[in-house]
Length: 507
Image 1: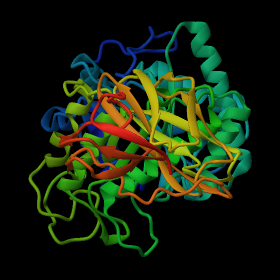
Image 2: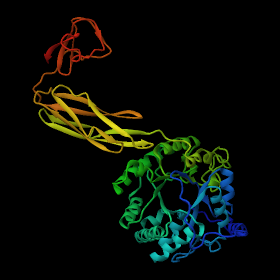
Image 3: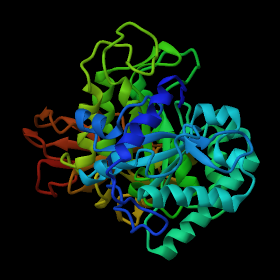
Image 4: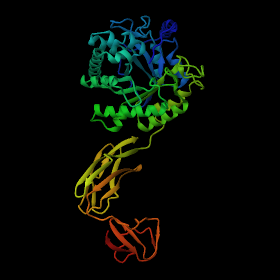
């Protein structure tokens, strides 16, 4: 995201210096461990170069948590970081210290963010600028202890995505910080904010996470910038958020195979750009989009919901282009914040739910052979539940079985379909149904049988809703049946020899 330097940055030093007066104490090198962030947090970006008070805007908007952008070095090659790369804004109580302490006293917190567009294109992102891993780690630790916070964000984009040495240094430094935090009894989380395609991370972004895994650095949140696609395509920004996050979920599942579905969704963050983004009106995130994304984020249980940026959450420039201080669309001040803010409180609890899929979803066999498929379940909302699996629809000469027949959502079962030589050639649809406390979901498996010696039934298939009278014939499960009297809803083969249906034999 863009860190736009302007004359307003000069005001920031004055505002924060005055705010620091009267600040009795703030965390130093041995601060007590900070309060961890909620499991689900809304933390919009605050543009720290504007000269405004983050505590004041947090109170006005109702955003309890803020992501503060950005921290970087003043010049390429330096190992000393400042807010916005401004030497007048060091990492010290005099810079935003009073504001951060006020936000924390109200039950919120801030997430300092390193990098950003400007730093990442000028070589002033700390890991690009500094070649000493220990000094990079020391810079991270200083921010943590100075402001007594529990999460650092790494905004890595543009040129920083191609700096493999910087990527490796950053993750090595993160590992040092995490070891230090563990030894100190602190909880410190790391989020990576990365650009995305509409279907997940591009290879360069994925490489950042792969390097973290290789270095043993824990990534707590992978935060997607779901805007600025620049692909000249038509966009529904809410739908694109969901497909991008699903793509990331699939990538994380490969990186962290031991994690459950709920844990993987709990690693995902989404950052929108409210209103018109840098590409232009074709990529406009609307209030309706915000409501859709909020409901989706709650249902999936993602970790972080955010947007760029708090100062843009107003309708001061309707019909305009992307700007630092307005959204470019018709809206009231703080409309987007008010939609997203309940995400932190957790007052909206998603109903537990799951999905069922069969992979592959079809198979073809010669009569007498077997086929198989993996039945996968996944948590789509809330918590995992027990899912009981059944299969139906197998015709005569086909046996379908599941192993196991009960899984915890997120688990898998094997569907085995065995045929006999007498199976009638044809295509059949089998239904695999998963039943849990929240309801049932069904996946289909299409089986094609060739080379069978059986004969296709010619009578009309039995239908449970049809009324039959004496003498009428139907086919059902490879047999012909004749009704002895008027009937409806009674399945052939279930009424016994004295029942309504007479078995005329296999067809």
